[in-house]
Length: 197
Image (tube, rainbow, N blue to C red):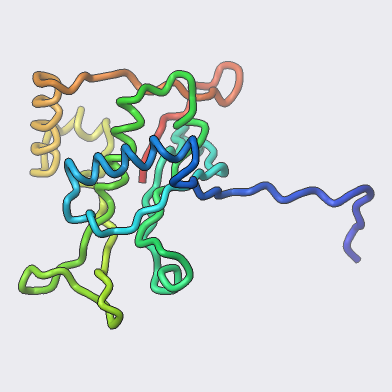
């Protein structure tokens, strides 16, 4: 027999919260989103993208904490809401005192890189039976361990291209900044490392 709780029932914590486009918080965030789409992601100009907070992300056993994730809407999602993608953001990271505007911009740009149009064999955007553009989620350019690069160097073409991009950024106009400050997991433990998906 299940044990009964005494006292009033606990409220369930909200895991996700849609960020209102016309609200005080959302207005500058959606303006940045529109600016990035216009500047770097013109294939997404017709995509309907929502922003939402995710409050459930915690650091994993390796100290990584997710600060952003791009979720493509399923066919059912598209029937229920007018979104093609939802970009989930860590409210703790985004609103943190030590998070710089350049870091917020990079995070949103990163998540937009995951959103992509699906093309047919002729290079035309695919559409569904309702005439809506079909989208897909793009993976990261590289996935590698730091130790492997230290031991074996740039052994793959994607690593070579990534290293070239890093060199260009270091020499050009893009400032290299340290890792953003994050809340520590406790006394003596290193702070979580922000990660995006």
